[in-house]
Image: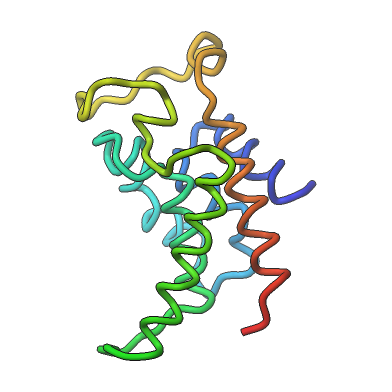
Length: 150
């Protein structure tokens, strides 16, 4: 199973967008699966259903941070190089989807929604582009990791 397929399957199991992407890369990360899922749990629904940055994009950023991030109070080149990675991933996602903002990707005109997520029914999955978006994020991240040698 590809990482794209794993991420999409994770979403279909009920994980949020961010968790779905992060979990697809769990084997590469220096954090146990339970902690990864907790770490990504706040980013579903565009950050707690605020409909801001797409959870799958946040998931890419979590993975890239765990793989290549810095852990000191950096202010110079180390921080700039890491932010360059983040911006490159965002750019690749935007090229494919036109935005990294959840509400724009879903065609919503509300900025915030109630904190209670919708039930995951067949109708829910039919009207959501999320599985494909999540798959694209995982694919973009996997390609980026393969291309780059850090």
